[in-house]
Image (cartoon, rainbow, N blue to C red; front, side, top):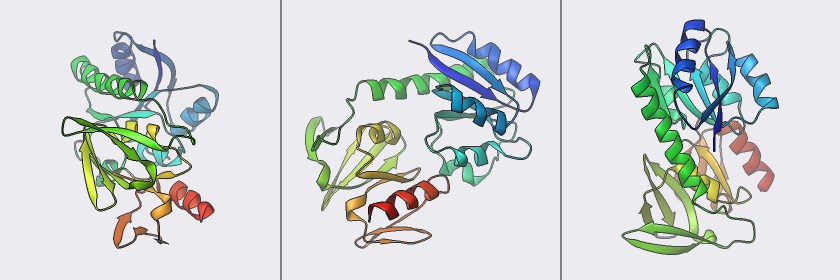
Length: 234
C-alpha cells in the first residue's frame, strides 16, 4: 500500500530535494508539488492526500497559517530553514519537522513516524455510533471503558492520559490515532493536546471550555471548528 503525499514549498530547490528523498522511500507516492498555500488548497480539494511536506516560511500564507485553514488536515511534516520557528508550531499536531538542508536519513526517520501512526490507526478498529465501549491498554492490561465515562483525553507525546470520572489511565497511543477511534458525534478535538467529551462541557468561552471545575484551552488550529461543533451540539 502506498500513501499519497504532496510537497508545498515556495523554493524550487527545496521541492526538488524532498522529491528526491520521497522517490527513494517505498510506501510513498508523490502526487503533487505546490509553490504556495493556495495551490495546495486547490490540490487537496481534488486529491486524497495522506501526508504533506509543508514549508513554514512562504509568502502571503505561511505553512502554519495554512494548517489552520484545513478542517481535517492530512498528516504533516513541517520543513524550515529556521531553528526557532515560533511557539505556535508546537500548538499543531504535526508528525515531525525537518531543518533545512534536509538529509535523506532525517527524512526517512520522519516518514517512519508517519508510517507508525498509520499502522496504529489501521490496527485499531474505528468506533461507530453504535459502539458503547473502547478498549485501552494500560498497566499490562486491557480495559473496556464506557465512552460515557471518558471526560477528556490528554496528550503526553507518544502516550495519552484518558481521564475517566475520578481516575485516569495512561496508554501508549498517539492522540491522533485515538481520535480516529472515538466517534466525532461525541468527542471534539479542541487542542493539540486535548480531546473532550462534549457531554461534560459546562461552559464555553473564547479561551476554552470548562468540564465542571476543569478548564481546558482552545488551540489556535482547532478553536474555530471546536466552537462551531460545541455550539451546535448544545
